[in-house]
Length: 314
Image (cartoon, rainbow, N blue to C red; front, side, top):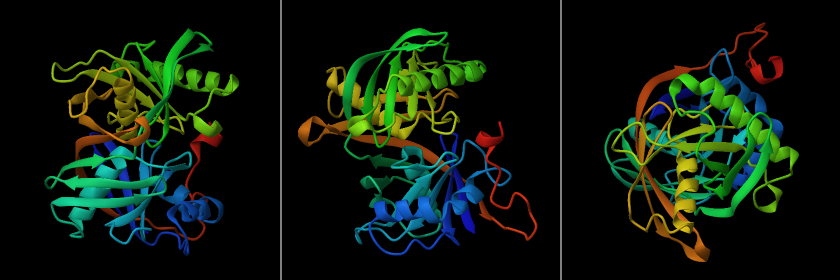
């Protein structure tokens, strides 16, 4: 399996360019289902240790539903599959440029949750127009063990988020273990109290906010992703969900800039335009850098040829 590795604002992406599963025909959503049901060993091999890590997000390049798109892409991580991934889309764009498949300008990616517009601004700079995003519920309170009452908004930015203003733990890199424990407790409480996104969909991302560390940013966040890893970047879909909440509260107008800072200090520059039915179209700009070109191998007799699922052995 051949792949190109990159990082976007510190968060890694592994783009599978050759040797991935054969998923047949049908829509991207149908092929994602086939990936999950019949070819999950490819995800495990590419993402899990010893070849990957819990922070790594994978992206399988495949035929788009819309032939005008530069590529179709299915995103996945150590826990399963993602509808969309903002930092991953930026990483895919830089990877396609690295491979000579796109030039600076406007292009599109097909994802299982819709078409994403990508603006290749330079070798390493990309802006994406994400899928339409919206706030589903506001000021939802949940009782969390050891934290008490935690209140947040539920919003869609390509994935489902529970967004908490006023982090229960200081937003410092030295507090990542404590932030992770707190976010996992919030996620468990949402499941216990049967609090979901639209249509009963699981809220699988928890996002805490607080004051920024940099004078150029508007806020700092900590994002817990499915599978237990924290996002090193400010999180593209999470920033999209944040913009939806700011727009709903009339705290950010269309075209105004919001600079979101991650727990490690990296930044995304964000804005939005209005979309039908009260939704917004977020624009997220960031930088990605190529880390390597890799060939992933499986040797006969390797007991971990399909990777080590640390979530099961922990």
